[in-house]
Image (cartoon, rainbow, N blue to C red; front, side):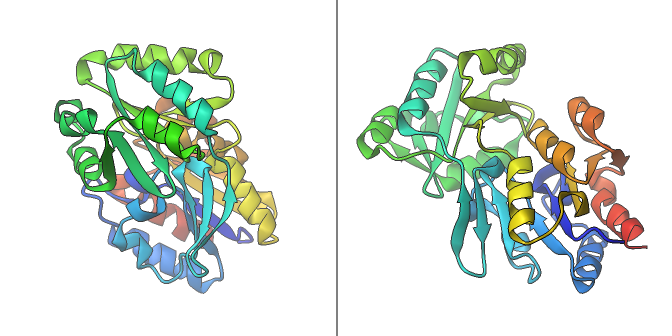
Length: 277
């Protein structure tokens, strides 16, 4: 087995539905690390939002974060690569989201920021995603008005995100379809049932994966990537072997090289052990 870099999404992929890492996944990661593989969590989360059960893994040095807006070196505690949204463009995106029945936030400097009124009144946007509601309340800092905060700082944004109520999911689908025409400099994807995640078009888990592999001297064909959401499409397409979970979005399954067992059935671990032989 010559593949040297394994990248894996977290929610819906490495994690089961309780946000735990199944024992079989852990055994497989440990076996791959012993074989000298580079193991890379690839997530839409910012660095502080990566759970301790991942950050405590001794063999995970590099992280693809914020959907590829950054590559983080945990050993050196520094960001190796950035692909962020300019402040003026982020403000225009906020102005568009103000016309929709959504709440929204952004990641900037590895912290989450949200207009206070949205922060205080967002619970009914998450009836089917309670873990996401808890994450928003724990990791977002409320500010009086997000657009004005971004305008005053003038700094780029790592990622933006909007959340829809369950009754507005058809609107969410339409927004995803028309987003490239509205903002060609940006990319809209999803990772949970009611969100749209917004990144610079220069970002992407796939671009970050190949950039990190090149930095480490690993050929693109010697990479494997696992995912379940549309924010993983680019990564699975660009990796040497792209593996979609059984629970993955249909669009991701369509671009994957193969489909493994679901996140509930340790599909990541089963596939890694098979690849290791």
